[in-house]
Length: 112
Image 1 (tube, rainbow, N blue to C red):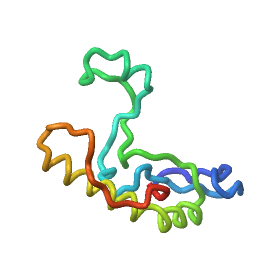
Image 2 (cartoon, rainbow, N blue to C red):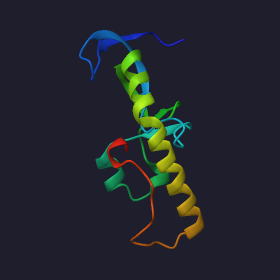
Image 3 (cartoon, rainbow, N blue to C red):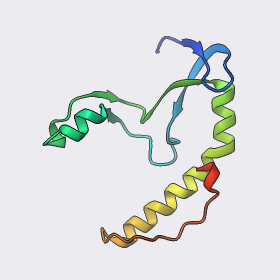
């Protein structure tokens, strides 16, 4: 088991044990391992298959919020974000790679 991380919560400012905050939420297709790399490495890479970085096993995110703030923001925003991501996935699959400048979305923009 990983060693607990104690630091300043980026939301409430309290010094507490931090929890792993998935960004975007895990349910928004963020549950698989990712390669974490710098913008410069990606932009300058000629072959993305040879990209260097660190594998992050639990999806994209970081230890930035205490458990209470992580749970609160998840309750406030995650459901709307997940619905938006699911709409986007359905539209992308239906478009079969044909790009358009306009796609209809139903969302609360400030939550996403």
